[in-house]
Image (cartoon, rainbow, N blue to C red; front, side, top):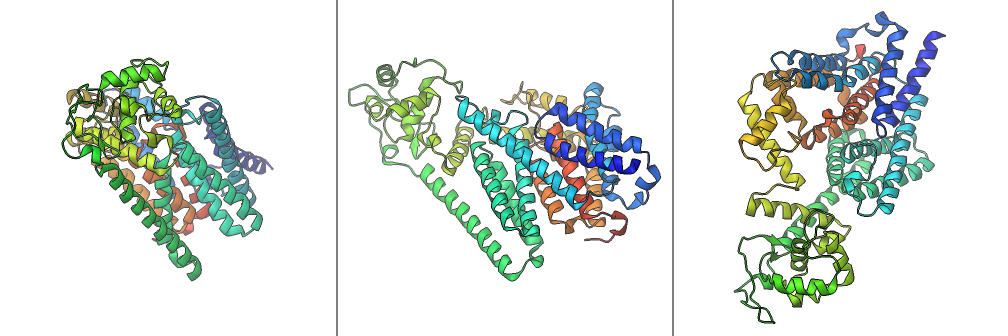
Length: 517
């Protein structure tokens, strides 16, 4: 009777943790602690750890924890190291509970899926309401409870779970419900500007298609291969077209530029080579006429800051450039009231008002142009990551074997940014890459200990046979490239609960799964 009570509590807490990890940090902490407490007081140690030698995934998580503990030795910032260990306690507690407890029943699995996906749907609706009702709300703040990046990872996994469940249960009503929810998620990811999520979904889908093609019927395999090929060609063609449109010089930027405006005022032609929308941004500039005409068209002061933190002038300059006109009184006559309103909000390119992939590509091209012309990375997320990766790699090269220790990663990265006079010196950013974070902290020795332990677990427990586990693994590993996923509670619970629960479902009795994949 007591065992049944603990089992019921365990199933309820799994549902709460699956749903809660995309909402409240406090609630998530409370639930994983309760999950561990319920496991602890049940006191069935002999049964839980029977066959421990074959529980390779649990061993991997224990090794990762041991590495974090051992690499505290010699660290100069012990307080930060202990804080980091405290933050990563769910990486130990959740695997201990989930991997030593019987797998949830089919009904319990469906309940967990419902709580998980249902909570994500509710949070996304809350985000849409905020987006529609709060003026000029930054896309990073659309989701109120969790980082928009971590939330995107959960959406990716939820879409995989829905697609897999639909193929398994084969119910027409679930096709409609699941398909509608997945379509909603696609729309929401677009609103969230989470194009990284689309890249993760694409790579994960292609990986699953290649890895499990032998399980598919010929017809399904042909359909999926055709879709994957069409998407690849479409993305490739789109990229080529946008590159051509962005860099192909328009007539205004070819030949010898005129010296004066139609009103006889001199033009400024700064030949720094900065290109946007097929035109040199700093050609045909007459600030005097722009200032005069702006005062006639808008009550917003020409030298005041917009909501993006820049003055009107650079936004107006780039907007006129995007229209393919001169930056003078003639160009100003082409601006419509909606253009004036956009510039007042700091929107610097007509393309940015469109809800299309072109905006994403043009933002990335402009970031590259600023780096090419001015070596600037400020306010550019992609280039900031490249700068942080370069800086982090330099720190790792200085301590390649054993790293800097669990507590010194942030301090060493920040010091290196200052020593190299990086434009990111003084910020709170350090790596934005989980692999690099581990290399800096633990060196090659610690990194290999962790990596080998997890590869061994996947092979020995034959986890690569599970479509869902492989999908979750792909999503997590890809996220490690552009994010330090394990530095926040949301990322830690996503990795720990997702991998362990799907592994437990895939191998209900891991002691009988010791062959290589």
